[in-house]
Image: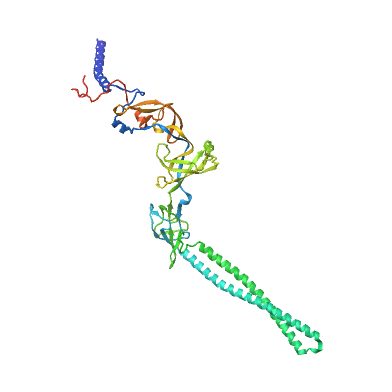
Length: 465
């Protein structure tokens, strides 16, 4: 009896469960719209609301250009000559900082002022050396005049002595007919002229030695002054980075912007002491940037003659994003990195809108070759199902528009479009955006009417039993 009661109890429980579950199954069956199917190959009919929700867009298949590209990632850098750190050449105290990070400055604009006693002393030394050079130049001119005078006097004295010596020789040959007093007088005069000529010769050698010495001193002093002046700011040079700010304060130096650009960093404050070479601020010009990438060794041969090739640049590391800039290959290194097995690639790109930022990773599509007469579609139009590829082709007009799945065979693809070998012809209209979402929608069965508006019943579920 106990066993029978247990069996009866289980049967009652099963019946109760069935009574509970049966209505649920009935509702699920009723929720499926008439004519709807989950067959992935069934055509799709899309309402305007659904199309807007999935971002559905269409385009006509046509001939176009497909390119052979090499895809790399790279990092944006400022060009070496377009990133400048402004720093003093001598220690001092900051008296003015006229800009803030983010400010755009034009070349020649005032950036900062630094008061440097060391600079003032050097300027004093330069002016002292310049004064010494002027004094030595005056001495040099005097010495040159003295040498020129002696060079004129010495030949005249020598010639006079020779004439008197010749006359004495003639008078001596004349014998008793010549007065002894006259002969003695001529001999004395000849000896005196010869002595004067000797003294002038010695003086000339000394003057010449002094002239050589003065010339060396002038050259040394002038070189010392020029060397020191080369380390000092210009007094009035519109192309200089440092200029003297105030003639009455020789140590006050004004720093001017060396390039047009944006102030990226500022590390100086008014009243702060700074050492020589310590950056006050940094200016960068990012209107044109340089992108550094690494080319795998196996792709080097494809880019052997790539210098000057066009490059499309996208932010991030995916081809799905929009092209933000275009550039050209500037350099492919002939050296392979022994560790990474890559060659360094440099790309230069225009960046007038500032969309590329230093340190940012970007996707590079380097164009190697192009086919201008291929049947192409956007890569976003293709849905991949394991090894199969398909698209959705639009058919019909007005309220009768449907989208049918069509298998395709793809050829060459680049970062924008895919070449179609089989499955599509120019003139076909396909879904180019929202294709994957379209593949997830429920299809319909042709010939079976689709429901319009649900009819409310007394049970509140929108249908009658």
